Amino acid sequence: MGEAKPENWIRCDETGKEMLSRVLSGRPFIIPAPPLHRLPLRLRNVVEISGPSNSAKSQVLVQAVVHFILPKEWAGIQFGGMESKVVFFDLDCRFDVLRLSQILTHRISETCGSIGQIAFDELFHDCMSRFLYVRCYSSSDFLSSLKELSYQIQRKDETIGTGLRLLLIDSVGSFHWIDRSNQLRGLCKGKNISPHSLQEAIVHELHELLLLQPLLVLATKASLFRTETPNEYQRSSISNSTGDRNLLFREYMPAVWQSFVTHRIQLHPSDELLSDGSEPIRSYTSDWLQPSVSIKDRFIVRDDGIFLT
Image (cartoon, rainbow, N blue to C red; front, side, top):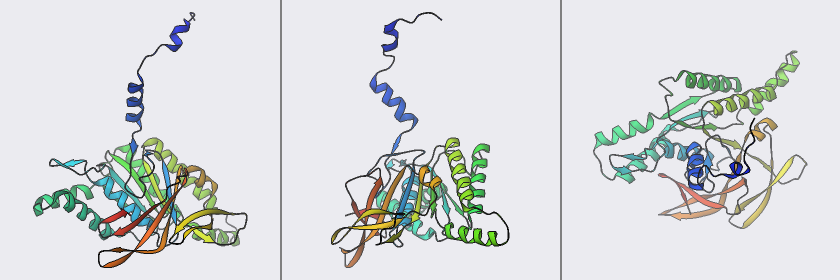
């Protein structure tokens, strides 16, 4: 091997602009719809959206769906959408397709104004064709569905096709207590059924899926709060109408899931009611936990979507 000249090691083969263009084109930043807009996200990021019941977690997912399935441009009209396919895993079995239709209809009407019914139906159908819905009734059902999705992507199935960029899970901890109960029943019958092994298999399949197809993953998770302070509880600061209050939440998801998550945001309903037209409307707060962001956003949920206040 010949000797390399010292100047060859520091010779510039591309400019800074060319380097940034190369890096950002490979994994471009994604600016999601509020309240996830504070941090630029990338494909293969896994965002956990946690919060108690009635904290608008599912509404945030629906808002993200609409942002991704809307076109960037249609008939010369700028929509600013991602024009990407979305797969929604409904583990809670409570997905409201009418709510998705309502927000999508509002966005199309607001952007296009008054368009003919034929043109509206064409655009609406085009958007909904990018939305794939999967309902799961158990952890093993969820695991099987992930394997089937990977298989379809590998086969380049027409249903999946190209352009899949967003995977949503609502809610990732839905079967946690069922799996624990099944484990106890299995131990009584002499069977070895481990919820941990199931979660490991699910996370492994998700990891392999992200390697096969770069996706942004958004997963909701119900939070368990209390005011005591055992060792297994973590402290979290939540905003309400009277200021900041410290609450404690218990992390019940296994370590394999916790290490898989790259970003965490926590939602919480506020005690304060805001005036929106003639009726008061509840507001919500969002707080980025990982990475930590000092700014907390407040938002409301209206018929036409989520809006910051």
